[in-house]
Picture 1 (cartoon, rainbow, N blue to C red):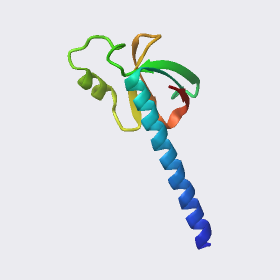
Picture 2 (cartoon, rainbow, N blue to C red):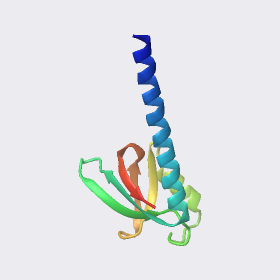
Picture 3 (cartoon, one colour):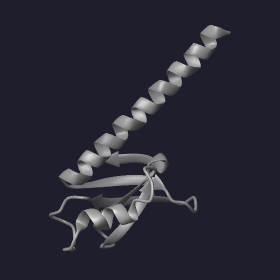
Picture 4 (spheres, rainbow, N blue to C red):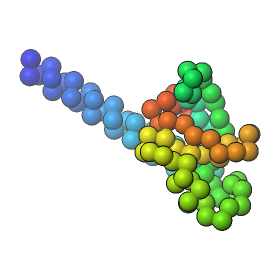
Length: 101
């Protein structure tokens, strides 16, 4: 019984660690250039988006950090610049299905 509980806890820890690694890789890719992120939208549809947080691709703004902070309402969501739609979009970290850096 105790052994099974420990096994479940270890599996949860590994899952959380993997999500943290994925989040760090995506964020690093976003700041370095353009990446492609696949995720499930709030309405349940799947979407693939080419996006970035690299200043080279972002529109001129008075204070970029304020603009991003304003759009990031929680740690569960990240605001990014959609290259194809030329606008700010966001996605939930837990909805990410895949990404290409």
